[in-house]
Length: 312
Image 1 (tube, one colour):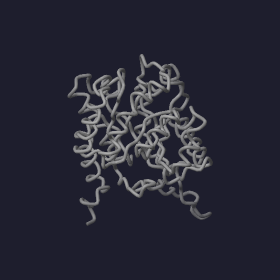
Image 2 (image 1 turned 30 degrees about the horizontal axis):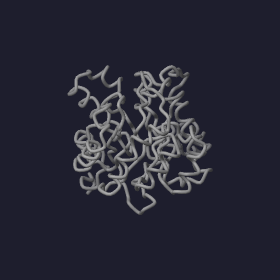
Image 3 (image 1 turned 90 degrees about the horizontal axis):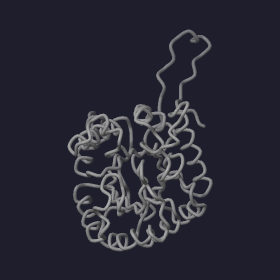
Image 4 (image 1 turned 45 degrees about the horizontal axis):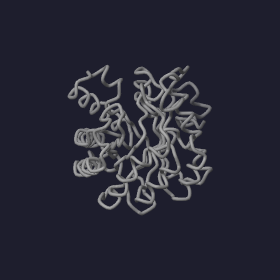
C-alpha cells in the first residue's frame, strides 16, 4: 500500500527538531465522464431503489412510473447523479436474486430515465449484464459494492465503455456481510483493500481519473467501525481518488441520532456535512434536498465552493 501521508525530509542538522505537519494529496476537483459531462465536487448522488426490500424505501419505487417521477424530483432538488439499483444489500434480511429479476426491475426504469434525465445515471450493480443494459440507456457510472470482484466481466466492461467506477469495501455478500464485521485495524484494512482494488481496476484498463473509492459504511461494519472510518477520511483521501460516503439513513445513524424520520435526516445531514468538510467528494443520499443543503454549507465553510471562496 502507498504511504497515506507524505512528510518532508529533515536535514542531518535538524534531527532533533519537530517534523513538519503531514501533507495529504489534494482531493480531485471534478470527474470527467466519457461523454464529456463533468461532475463538479463536492457532489450529491441520489438513491433510487427499484426493489421491494431495501432497508429505507423498499417497495416505494418498484413501480417504474413512480421510480421515474422520483428520479426527476431528485434531479430538480439538486442531485448531481442518480444511482439506480435493483438488488437490495440491506444489513439484515437481504436475499440474493437471479440476474433476470434484477434486469426486470431496472430495465424499464433505465430506458425511461435515459431519455429524460439531464444528470448522469449510475447503475448500482455487481453484475456485468445489468451494467451493459444500463449503458445502453445512457448510464455513465458503475457503482459496484464488490469493487469489480463479483463478476469477472465487470472490469473489462468498465474499461471498454470508459465509464467511471465506484469501488466499495465489503466483506461477504449482500445476504451475509454483517457476519464479517471483525477487524484488527478497520481503517488500515479498508484503505489497503481499496488501494488494491483501484490498482486492479487500473490494470484492467479503467482510467485512474475515473476511479472513485467508497469505505462501505454499514457493509460488514459495526457502528464503531463506521465512526472510525469517518474520522479517518484523510487516510482514504491520501490514496488520491475521490471518496464517496454513503451514511444516509444507516443503522449507526439511527442509533446515535434517533430512529425517527426527522432524527434520521438530521443525523444523516450532519454526517454528510462533516464528510464533505473532511474532503469527501460525493455523498450518497435518500433525501436529496437535505443532502444538497448540507453539502453546500460544508463546501462554503471549508472553501470548497468557488462561489464563497474565503480568499476571494
